[in-house]
Image 1 (tube, rainbow, N blue to C red):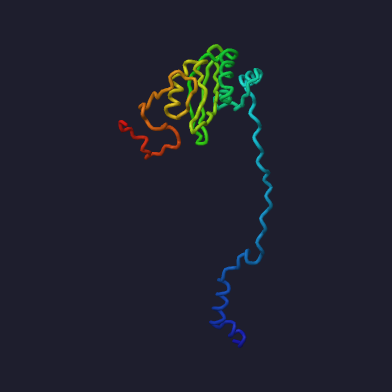
Image 2 (cartoon, rainbow, N blue to C red; image 1 turned 180 degrees about the horizontal axis):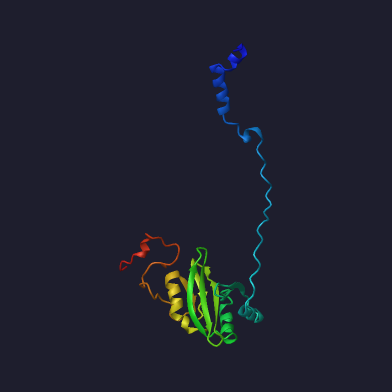
Amino acid sequence: MSEESAKQNSPEEKAETENKAAAPPKADAEKAPAAKPAASTAKPAEAPPPREPGEFGKSLEQAGIAVTHLGKDAMGIEAIALSTHDLLKGAEHLRDKCAFDLLVSCSSVDFKTHRQSVYHLYSINQNKTLAVKVDAETRDGKDYSPSVYPIWPACDWHERESYDLMGIHYEGHPNLQRILMPVDWLGHPLRKDYTVDDPRLVWNER
């Protein structure tokens, strides 16, 4: 055996060759520079289209009453918003010209910044429903909205409930008193300023 062959077959040379073969290759990320992120091609979000005026909102506008069109809900019910200034005039128009002869309900919503009344009206002859929303005015720390009692007397107990639980004072209501809570209850328990451990939630025969 030649000296050169003996050197190649030596144990030290053989071990070094095996170690090199077993070593993992360097990652490609170490060899190539990091790729630059692609420029964003997303278009800015577009503003939603304006709500389509509904049948009864158009009728109010034609009568010179300012109205905000809120579109239709999932059940196809038209919704509009009226100001406290135009509420009674708009309600009279809806009763006399649009045949909304029945007030189904009056509920209220607390948005923290303001309170809102929601009236659902029904026309028996047309078999149609309309939702009317009215933001209450805040004066001296209290919320006020006109009562629609002169137009639909059926709102009597509905508005009393909204007053009792939400604190909206319906001006012109003939008997605006609590209807669910004790007469000496503090505050209005459906408002968002109440907390679970609020002492006002405990009635103690004050």
